Image 1 (cartoon, protein in one colour):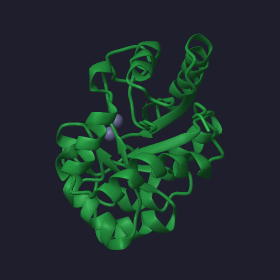
Image 2: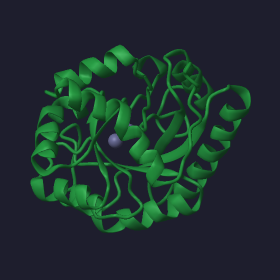
Image 3: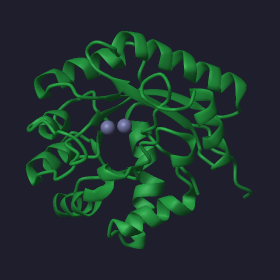
Image 4: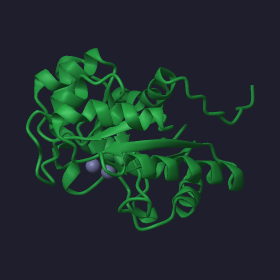
Amino acid sequence: MTLFDFHTHTSISDGHAAPLEMARRCQQNGYSAYICSDHVDEATVERRVTEIVEACRQVSRELALPAVPAVEVTRVAPDRVAKVAARARSLGALLVVVHGETIGDFPQPGLNLAAAKCPDVDILGHPGLITEQAAEAARDHGIHLEISAAGLHGMTNGHVAKVAALVGAKLVLDSDAHRPEALLTSERAHQLLQGSGLDLDQILRVSQAAPFDILARRGIEIPMPQTAP
Ligand SMILES: [Zn+2]
Ligand SMILES: [Zn+2]
């Protein structure tokens, strides 16, 4: 079994722990990699991606855990998302999450759809009451829709799972952790997916197949522990 989590925050943005501390807990919890995806917008993308890339280098050096630099493009107007996502990628972010239209804050109408059409986006984070149109666009562009372990963001997980199944879009589970205690465990991941209305086949697809689809799409290789033949 593997455990991935593409959406975590650190003190580089509004998280409460340093990247190394988050990564240590990821390792304790059995994560297969540490993925640092702090918030960026037009004003912060240059500085923060540089910090995220450096933090991931430090984690890889100090812990025997692969570390992947990523971002969450947050509170950027729909017509600017593609530009910020491309900039983050050009600066070294290997994966791009977009802060979608969660009911947990003030969603910008049109943001889900804009992000779902963007070639540099990998995951539409906590997409709230996503429309079928936006979910179809995500499906067509190889973007995964997020089931969120985070409080208000997760209140629409059942809806997200339903719309994804309806249109054939793929799902991924993320913690959106801002502190080490909020990171996933395998048991918690299973509970959250079950609680989102998924059956066992769907749970396995989301937890065991989706992460490798996301990584493979960007050519990211995570060495996995060898199992005995
Ligand atoms: Zn977010
Ligand atoms: Zn987040």
